[in-house]
Image 1 (tube, rainbow, N blue to C red):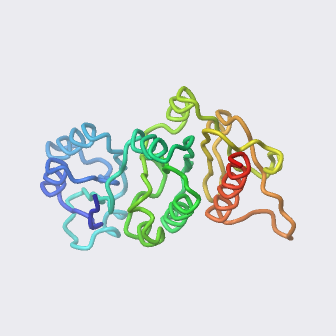
Image 2: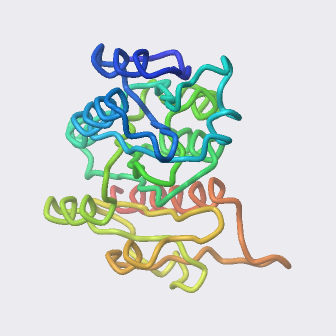
Length: 249
């Protein structure tokens, strides 16, 4: 199900957006606002498990297109988020072990869209992103995905580490990308797998890394030591594709 991306400004408008079932991707409230209408909004956000970002009035003024935000702006998702079961159902339909790409605080929607595009082409069954400090399914991400969002489930979770623990209980193991790891060609990347890719600047966070079974490094032959995160995801994803293809012969 697709939505047109837009922002909603004003307290009553945001309340109605929640109550009408719209998917609020991000919610921004002016710091210090605690009146009745704002409390109603935060209750609705809690019901829908939406993260609330408290920001300065100046930030809202910059985001506003009407100048009448009343201390509240909601960003509506361009696409509806999927559920974990949607990913497993896709893997089952194809008769394949699950292959999931997990993104640890990817902030650039262009990178998010490019990774979703790669996930689709590499045969991944879905992508998982965290709710906090991460890009969501905006129109920019949708455009960068080149249509892949129509076919690749994207799940948004509150706690990435907890989700990884749940997936481990369902048979998945995890490999994360880090230049200090073992060269990817020496790792067994077949079977039910989650590929974890970290933030553009900080990489994979400590807790997420500690919950990975393997750390994979991409061989570097040039004069700089890192790839763009979407390119790195593509390299590792296609090593998984290669190894799966070999093991299926």
